Image 1 (tube, rainbow, N blue to C red):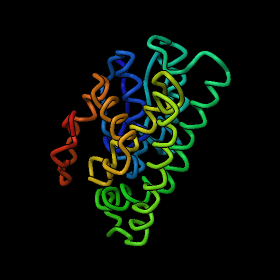
Image 2: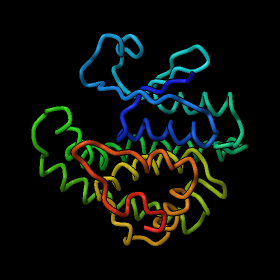
Image 3: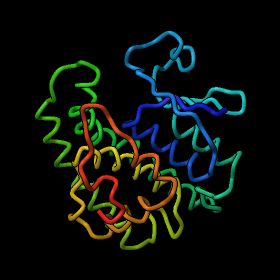
Length: 221
């Protein structure tokens, strides 16, 4: 059995979960309290981070490396386009969300509001929360600009870029930190991707002490 060591509100874990589900690869989910630096987990990934995927007799870490391994070994349905230029754009946007968006928004909102409490690291830093709430507006506007020109974020077909963005936004939506009325294009895009069967597992997540808002699992918001 394939096994994914993950945290439910980790956007990097969620990205891998979406890819696995889209390709109909069954996996056992093992919740990992990675911040406790358990010796068994550190043997699986010395970096001490989730996700870690056990698949095909090997242990794999780093979400993008995992996703591209899955894409190359299970190419249908395709989540990477054919041409080098198109693939470059997908990778650019994946990095945009996993680096820039994560640093400017996810780490300032999700990590302050949820992770600190779960990990016993104190109270949210109001300056970080305010910064994240300001920066997400810029990112939503940028996504809206992209979707003015394309059906999906990276082009005419859904790709790994969409899953990377949706992984981060779904975590923030769980804690009501996304203004879906800011941009109609982004709201329509998220409704479309949220309705995919691959998203069902994410919408079923329940974090003790942090109930999701009523709209979280509502496909029509």
